[in-house]
Amino acid sequence: MKLVIQIPCFNEEQTLPLVFEKMPERIEGIDCIEYQVIDDGSTDRTVEVAKQLGVHHIVQVSGKNRRWLGRAFKRGIDNALALGADIVVNTDGDNQYPSERIADLVRPIVDGYADVVIGDRDPSHFKGFSKAKQFLQKLGSATVGFLTGQPVKDAVSGFRAYSRSALLRIHVMTNYTYTVDTLMQAHQKGLEVVWLPISPNEKTRESRLITSSVSKVRKSGLTILRLSTMHSPAKTFAVLSALFALPALGLLGRFGYFYLFVPAEADGHIQSVVVGGVLLVIAFQLLFLGIIGDLLAVNRALIEDLLTRTRKLELQAGGEASAQQRNEDIRLVSNQQ
Image (cartoon, rainbow, N blue to C red):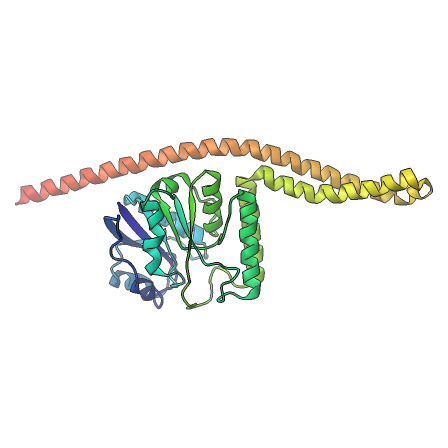
């Protein structure tokens, strides 16, 4: 069984050595461990440091760094699968996550009772987060849990292990980040998700992906809304519909009360009928969009199934080509001798 440990990096020359200080060299049940760095446009010595640390594979993300963690994750996963990885572990280059827990992270997959394992930092109680960040993390995880119908403890934790079969079925849809996207897809596709309690390391720097709490709320909120309309359209639009339907019914009920019991004052509340009627129309439109979205989701599931089959065939063909090339190299060496 082959494990690829991948580390997305952007200017991590100072912190990358810390990540490797407690990196496992052997794990029971794993035959081969390889390290992979995804360089997302670093302008420092990150690549040189990675080579000095013995990193086997360095994946360069072309173009200017835009703090698109999802883009870097996708590039790394594609390369890891092409390398024949049976398990891929993702950790961060800022040494936030404990490398010594990687063996525990992959254990549920090695033992065959998990497809995805996520490190749970217990963000609502983690002292390294401010009170505001603790609340936002808890709210975000609760929202994702509501949308997926599954318990979610730390929705944005980047310390994760994925089985090969899970990665073949998961298709990242956003460039901004991959954490919520892959988690929602895992639950939607019936993959077994296991949570591993961890204690993060001390902070080495501020987040480059999130510059402020306002930015976090805006970006994370829009990302969750976008993903929820893709993965859980019926539930999402039903909730949005209810947000308009409830005040609409309240306003219409208010007018109905005056019309039935205080008819002399009913004419003075005709605006309640107008506003309530508009809100009710919007509610029905949103509900209708949810039905359409749910029907489209069925088609998307079929397309994703075809994409999964295509990826398997491509990887299989690539593996056969690599094996053929290795045999050619061996024959050439033998003839030269």
